[in-house]
Length: 404
Image 1 (cartoon, rainbow, N blue to C red):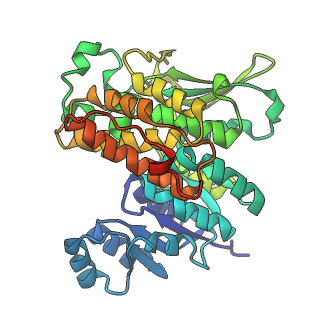
Image 2 (image 1 turned 90 degrees about the vertical axis):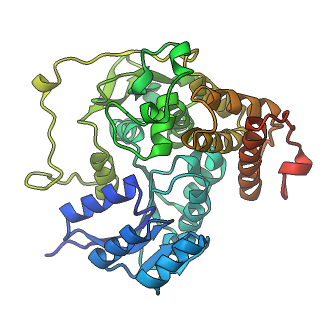
């Protein structure tokens, strides 16, 4: 009997995770049907994907006049505008939604997909970092599964199969350390954009690559892990592992440590999320990439340095404060990284600006979604103000709270 094909919607199909998700679909063409594709500005690639996979819905969220003109020419039937992402996430034929957008735009569509009972394959960090207090209860109430796509969270998830929650002592998230693992604080003052984008082990989009270089990416993953696995921050530790072979570990109460290993590639965690509860044989596929231990040679581990990489410390602090502090963290980081990539600030200014914004933020204890998004936008604006030499302006309930 033929296997039932899994019907998927991909949010952010032209980004790094979206493209690699489609690689998995190509490797197992009889096991998937792509029913919706959504992207932001890369109309040319979106049109190629639409031609290849023939989804029932194609969506483009950009309202830029040039992008709209391209869309009119290449994909005149495409859904468009900010609501198009939610339309893709809630497509009635979609069973699994791959949330692979970058940034704040992914939160509302994921919540909408959960409300419609869709399984979520989650690669968008901001969804749980900013709104974990909303997303996880909504998923539990709806009986919706959230499968992690990040390699570190996928590793923890895989190691937890068959293990009781009560057996966990610590989660150990591994970090490559990025390109500046041994750089001094003085060296990092002179880092160029080109240097920050030269990641030693992973091929990712520019925002995530810079976040990896500052270790903010790992900090966001700590907050994600807190929500995904219901483990307090005091029992989540970051360990630098430059080879990126061990993707994360769990230390159990009996002193045993379980870990997941594979060569650094996002294809495997994507495949595991989409194939669960099964493991699909890769033999003969374009994705086959087995790990050969003699070729690895050795593995190194070292402590994460929060003095040279203050973004990791700031993420722990924001997560521990809770409420709207992680939303301020995300908004400030997004804008600071954008300014760095645009050559407007230095590499070390990213952490300085984020710290100043967090210090100025009066946290809201139980923010609703509108408040979360408004605070993130406030933080972005505050980074721009500070970068332009203005003094900090405190956020207050009057300026950041909606219905809260």
